[in-house]
Length: 83
Image 1 (cartoon, one colour):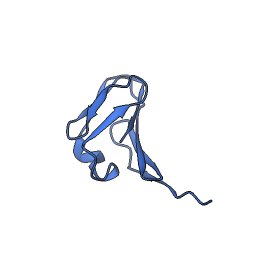
Image 2 (cartoon, one colour):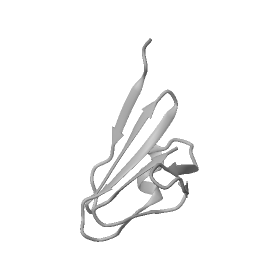
Image 3 (tube, one colour):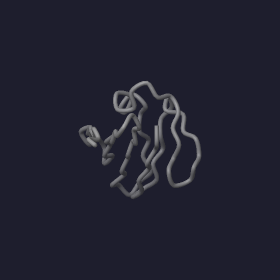
Image 4 (cartoon, helix red, strand yellow):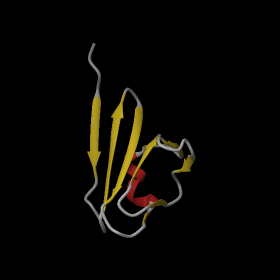
């Protein structure tokens, strides 16, 4: 059985690394903050990575994330969102 997997990256901006993994129609958005300060990621920056999704779930906490809003990423942390 063949599984189609894709990974799409965005150019890092202000210490934020953003990429998305897609497998069998499911997408995970991964945001890494490499700075010592809390950062806000504009929804316009990742909109193309999450396709038509408007809501996701943060893997670690289970809380719902509105993908039409900006995402706040704590200093030196990562956020993984299942779309």
